[in-house]
Image 1 (cartoon, rainbow, N blue to C red):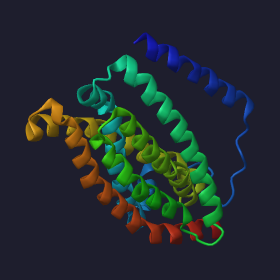
Image 2 (tube, rainbow, N blue to C red; image 1 turned 180 degrees about the horizontal axis):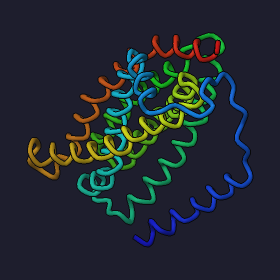
Image 3 (cartoon, helix red, strand yellow; image 1 turned 120 degrees about the horizontal axis):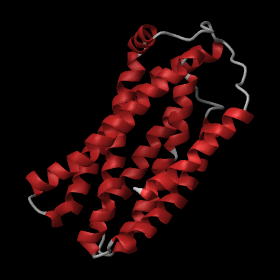
Image 4 (cartoon, rainbow, N blue to C red; image 1 turned 45 degrees about the vertical axis):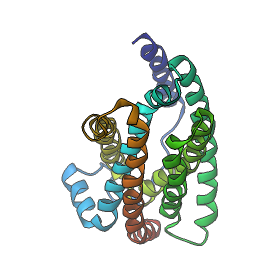
Length: 253
């Protein structure tokens, strides 16, 4: 508990620093200076359901995989390879830190390149990030050594991380200015609250009631990825064309 408190406190300082030193940028293309009520936000989502329905479901399934693996990753390394928390924790943390940072910057750069030719570039990058990362994260739990598993997970995390900037930019570019906070809240609630709860729970239930063995966690994680990964990629693919139309409309405005 003390670790959580110590790590969380600097966030308050950063928030205060931004509030006091960073000016709100001037908005363009806005029609509701006072913001949108929730009823209109719901109407916007409904009117653009061709994009938001598959995208929202896609990021939900994506977050279930991420939270599921993050929650059960340390247990996987301990049950499969004998790496306890003191060994697995620092190695997993460093590998994820490095691979995620590289993936985020690469993803942002790919978006900048593709957007010159494609209005739907951001969701294309998100789609390819999910497809390319799937073989690595699905194969990692089957590796004969923990180092190979750690390496494949790092590569998969790097590739999946490329979708982060793409997803965030797509959500902003396809939403009216004064509605962006509510839209972000909707997606963050889906990702963190729903996906963050269902992902670890589903892995636990599958291990207990399908695999019937704690030692079979590695196979549960493989199946988890192989079943859910293609589904979230397909859903994101379905959102690409509607996103391109919504982005063009927002840019025109």
